[in-house]
Image (cartoon, rainbow over all chains, first blue to last red; front, side, top):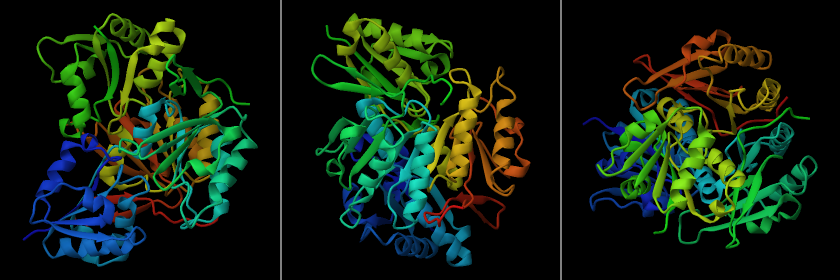
Length: 253
Length: 253
């Protein structure tokens, strides 16, 4: 029996955002591996084995999945959003490189998905319509001074910025520190979008000026997007708004 | 009759990367608007009206679509990849803001798709597995010095960089200039990925060190990804390679 390991992105939450390619991979799996809420989300056959784990055990989870695949199982690792964006794909290749030499010759594939930030952007307009950066705000795997250096570089070069993992129970002060740093570079009027649980029933999207952005609008399911100096708001009669970043920009000061 | 306007992302090319949400929107459309090759790609009913246009007419195309929606048609604008990433969504909102006041109250929605860069990244491993930037290399709508400032900021802060629109018939020297600038900051060993026509029959993916990266590997269907100083290559026995960027990084110099 020849095993395989596929890392898939389930998208931000709604089933209609799962690609047919991912649906087919899930249907063919013998084993599902992943963070418990994602594994639970999958609609799969009765015979599939579900291996749910805690959020913080990415490398152990990846090594476990590789071991199953080496034994001949058809393993799917489930990730939310796109698996290559602050999710399981990088952890998997770290485990491949550090693990059994035979693992690197396994049939390993990554299937892309709809990322949380693009789903969030689509809901509010086109805030990422021009050059942008994605930064993982967690300082679990990098020093905070590296995060700050990147925030500063991105804002000074007037990129739109998408922040993943803006806050958690164990990381409470970082988002406020990020806003403070960005306020030292950008005007207070720059729009900030808090997009939480996009496409799920709990979806919540708020737009506030950077000068008034407070970290308590974010939770673990929030992507925070900070506009560039060019990002614009279109007001609608019903009180809703579109936020977008035009495709043109001049010389940066 | 109440019209609507939906901007959809068809993904990078393969039908199995189109979300069910987009498929449903296409099936309900009365009119398809977009760049001719994308409009041609859509499998829709016989009665749908197809309005194909040239690549450079985004604003006119968006205004035309808005006019149709205002007349009560169910219009879908088709984009490749994700519509919010260097595609039609930003152009649409520019047209909304500059156009008829009534247009901003139309039923306008954006449906996300699998972006070209995430599809490309998935094919080769997880090169965007850590903080990254996306930059449109075209200087049609921004001065080249703004592009250079962003490239420099991104490389100095050690982001992975994804370049959209790296080259065209009318823009031949910019990609070489970008490589030259990046070589002044990064080691020559940093991996560069040229991902062309991902998921289409013409798919081609090359990995070369930055020191040997030549612009003639790119064409209009290529996304170019330049690794950070941390990006790694895993060699496989069959000669294939995985490229990934680990989740951890230290203090930047």
